[in-house]
Amino acid sequence: MNIQIFGTKKCNDTKKAERFFKERGIKFQFVDMKEKGLSKGELNAVTQANGGV
Image (spheres, rainbow, N blue to C red):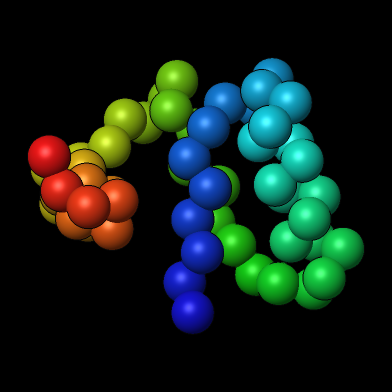
């Protein structure tokens, strides 16, 4: 399973999500939305996972 967290470094919800996965020893990838936005493929994947537009 490939888990990605999209957020910002200062966001409290992002910090909670990171802590959740770290405490359980689950690997994840953090994507800082201020440094790198969503690519077209990532946007399509997120949109489809949430029921589409």
